[in-house]
Picture 1 (cartoon, protein in one colour):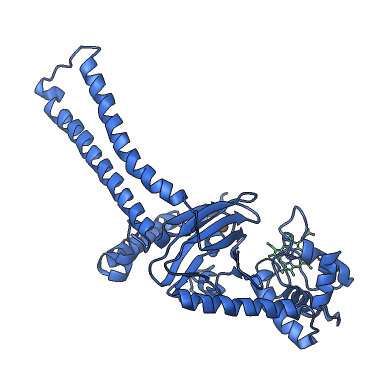
Picture 2 (cartoon, protein in one colour; picture 1 turned 60 degrees about the vertical axis):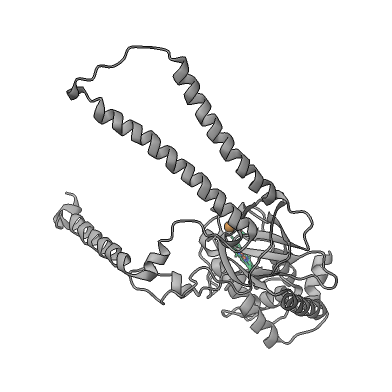
Length: 396
Ligand SMILES: [Cu+2]
């Protein structure tokens, strides 16, 4: 016998009704609560750039043209259905060809299309004109974070990753219970935002290191695909300082919803100070590659790097998620010869989810995370990897 039948067959129906009631009461709440109403905002934002406002007006223009067409077409349709219904004795016409009608229904749509094409082309040509920028930034999509690199600057190169900053407790709600309340910028916050100067033309060069991503900031009206092997262009002149948030808008794998875009627009003078500070920090990191660190220093930094870049697959306790993601605790590679361990972290493993971190992390971070893996979770190999070992391995 089917064991299912021994329970009340109505249980699924009843639980369905309960769910429906919950949804309905949530909707009713939404109708009165202003914060929920704000989340119901349907239209695109006007944004903070001349181009975003133009994009918005174009969108509204096309929208109202479509509304007008819809009203006319459905008006005629509904009127005909009612006025010429069979019960009123309507008799269908029998003609087959009407040149006048055919010319009208060709010419009118043609005029409408031309009327739409002219303003669209005007805005599109502006969107594509990324020339004469004052600052160029390379934006590279990774599963699942963004990397920003400031180009055409003198001095040490400024490049960094922008990682999701929302704590895992806020989104790992596997049961009905919520581990932590969702914050205000839930899944729209990062550890380090992209920083750009206000009122200057900033050009973005977009590409990807793995799959197709898409970089989107609604308030800039910038939405551009980041495609491996291609470099796409986009640009912005932000007119207001502040923080603007967006998302990756191309389905790019499991954590697609976890790679937000955050841009901070600063006054040009503040931006210059920020960039100078970043350059100094980049210089310090470059200098650190020739320094020697203690075990404690490496372990502390290694844990931070591990939690940001490795934990998603290999897990906080180093146990991984076999068979997809191997355990590092007790792993023959993590406890084996140093060269092999450095090798897999620098170069990854082709055809698996293990990426090459050699170009993503600094020598200090790589040395730290490898040292950490060799001495965490009971691995206790006892040896250390110094930045110079990484630089040497990368030179080979
Ligand atoms: Cu993505």
